[in-house]
Amino acid sequence: MRHAARHARQLPDRPRDDRDDCGGRDDCGGRDDCDERDDCDERGGRDERDAGTGTAAEFQRRIDIGHCVMDGVNANWASERALIMAGSRWRGAVAGLAAAVVLGAAGAVSALTAASAAAYPNPGRVTGDTGTHDPAVVRAPDGRYILAATGNNLSLKTSTDRIAWRNAGAVWPGGAPWTTPYTNGGRNLWAPDISYHNGQYYLYYSASTFGSQRSAIFLATSSTAASGSWTNQGLVIESSNAVNYNAIDPNLVVDASGQWWLSFGSFWSGIKLIRLDPSTGRRSTSDTAVRAIASRPNAGGAVEAPFIHRRGAYYYLWVSFDRCCQGAASTYRVMVGRSTSVTGPYTDRNGTPLTSGGGTEVLAGHDAIHGPGHQAVLTDGGGDVLFYHYYANNNASYLGINLLAYDAAGWPYVY
Image 1 (cartoon, rainbow, N blue to C red):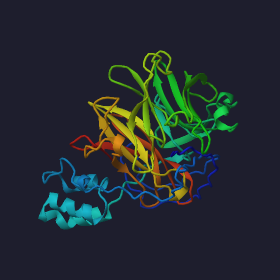
Image 2 (cartoon, rainbow, N blue to C red):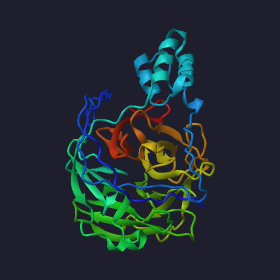
Image 3 (spheres, rainbow, N blue to C red):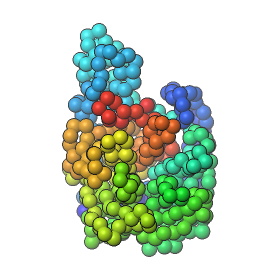
Image 4 (tube, helix red, strand yellow):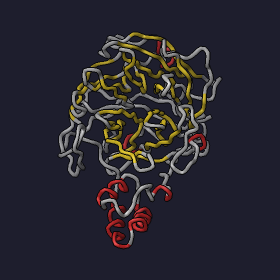
């Protein structure tokens, strides 16, 4: 049986250095120049292994030529705009050649050159306390951004502008003893999901240990989200070797009819979805089905970190493929599928079901950005923002932020 339970470890501090060639963004969270990133006092991490088969081979990056020709690209677009969109998805000369065909002979040389050199954009500029792992972000009614992340008793950070971040303490400064049966006494808690509903904050989070399927997802609530203000609302769902899933990496989504759902999962048989009771935030007692919404049966089961984001007529299921938590050797990448129903079926751009290993790549490692993943999406300022962690060359993990846009067919890309 395959699994990817996590293991906490301290990651080395990142040396302070100025970055060049940072890229550019022109709004909140933008990157106009380079800055020094402050060291963080403490960083949590998670290891993932495929203990079931002993295989350690990295997965080959999925390059789908069918994705190279974007819907909606045509000669009437400004070439710069087309190439920016292409750069978010195309890889290598093959993609450049496909672009050249679409753009026509007049733009063939420039399209080939741009696509050959294209890379995903760097993360937007962030400063302050930016060391993080598995970030989730909510916008408070007063305009602040509140970030929750993996760490000892769960890490909190805040920002007023989505650029400068500061340490805001721990969710449970006095510890969370109800989680220790799942952590073997450890304090490191994983992959929180934070949101705001009905005048209070809801925090779903995971407890487990490396190499164990004995895992649990808990709920906490708070009226302020401040450190020490949270109330334990108890267990939502747990897993053991009696089931075929792993109860970590939770994410709450509210569907168009107001019904609450929780997606979760890591390796084993993939990503699951359960119904919640909106009055309690805990699992429904009238609908106890565990629905399958994504899996990778032919890739060692390497899918986790679900996040469902509703936009227009679609629910977008964001997941992370491949291997996290191996520092600069991590192969994590951000994938997406969509459905008109929150329960699925979710399919990728090619129509492949996510339950059959499908997924459209939106972000992957590039340059000094390694293993971007465990993504979250926030609608903010009229647009969507992608939050994630990535590893630097020195193996430390940091907060990544990029803006999202959607092509003519409604598929997202980063810029």
